[in-house]
Length: 303
Image (cartoon, rainbow, N blue to C red; front, side, top):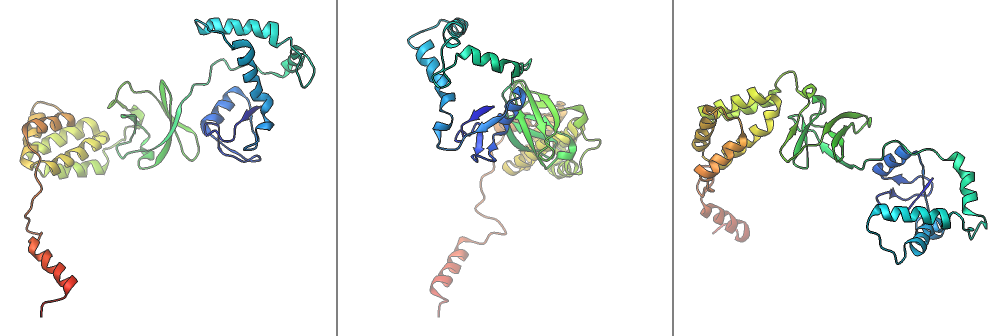
């Protein structure tokens, strides 16, 4: 068993001497090494003092005043110290030699796992309607049935694991992306047909002009469901720039066989100016109208 400090969030989330809530990652580490945590009562250091005193004992006797050039040199020193000093001493409470007590416990100890526990982050993500989640600026696919739902994500150093938030079963495991913006899309996660939402967005964009229609069509043909994010980006460009400018940029991209939203966005930033806010519009009354309404509400109608 491992004593677990009740006020350390990396181990115990909610202290309770009978039914504590443990950190999920800490729980997985315990399962990996085949041990059980035994949290102590909060604010009761005397209950686990002997466990913590071993650390101070090692620091004060084996390591105090010493410097080492490498971790290997330090480990070799600790091995010698453990064999010649720590294991031969008489324990202050039990009045027995440490080696003799260890030999009694040794038959009950289990071997360590062949692999070490690999640390990972645990987070939660909602699967976007293009079938991907975003983690650290990169995108990873999930099965289509999870679109719009939240899933648990384990982020390791070399891998990323998708976990069902209800059953806690592993959905899929991706190799970690090498850089931001990269997509990891499994072939099995591609939908059999283009979602209706993608086609509707493409139709809206096509209404801005023939160039927009050609570019949106190419996006859908090349990317299918994963074109959803780029189509939303196109709608954002049509809100920020004149439709004619966006249509010219899309026409140039489509004629050059380019299906990169980033290219269109960069092209517009260099060759077009964002629209300014309009002070006049047919559905917006003159400012004097609002002034009259305010006067009437605060001072009453003129006699």
